[in-house]
Amino acid sequence: MIRYLLAICFLGLLFCTSCVPQKDIIYLQDKGNSNDTIPSLVEQQKPYRVQINDILNIRIKVLDQDDATIFNPTGEGDLQASPQERAYFDGFTVDLRGNIRVPQLGEFLVLNLTNREIEELIKTRLLEKEFNEFAQIFVTVKLAGLRYTTLGEIGRTGSQVIFQERATILEAIANAGDIPIEGNRKAVRILRQYPHGQEIHRLDLTDVSVMKSPYYYIQPNDVIIVDPLVQKSLGTGTNGIQTFTTILSIVTVVTSTILLIDRL
Image (cartoon, rainbow, N blue to C red; front, side, top):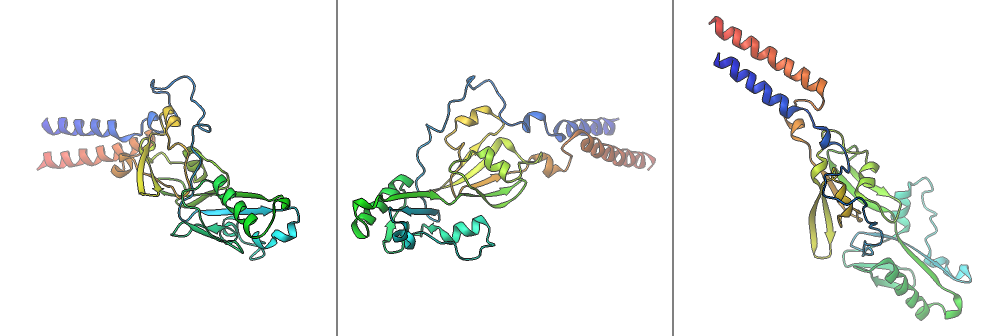
């Protein structure tokens, strides 16, 4: 009798912990701790400051554009290259000292500067060395895509690129193929690079209040890590059919074992 009770208790515990609850797989749920409206974070976000290994796309325009040809990449390399490869070869990579090198103008220390500050820095150097104020200099500096890395339980791991100025963590995950049912949406980790080193931040993507987080928008060189749920580690199934099949197999094994023991 005790054996049967133990078997029933074990199966009941297994059933309770095997399926992935619906609340663990739905994004942006209202858990009662958020306001009716989420404030726009576009205005709240501080301008991004350039870090080491960033790739900058710099374009210089003047009244006589032929005079600015040397400053602008021509892109005459491999015409079959992907946009990511073209951005790498045509862009200006921030080196380990935080500098970029521009033809004729030399090195610029751009570490921890915003795009607008870099534009003004280059424009000032151009006025000092190459042009006068009548050249009508126009400089644009952009990141050559938002580059980040995804690891763990996510549709596509590895290096990812989004060609836009700003992207949320949800857009970044969608771009990488979404998180499967086995992934833990409640504790997504972001490994982020800062001038003083790296820090890890955690986000609960099932809670709508994540949209208020200062880490809701990703930054270049972020590493997004999604851990597996315990259900995957146990191998008990993620839905009702898988769980039923698993439990049925266990019941068959346990029943057969008990019958064999009783016959001894």
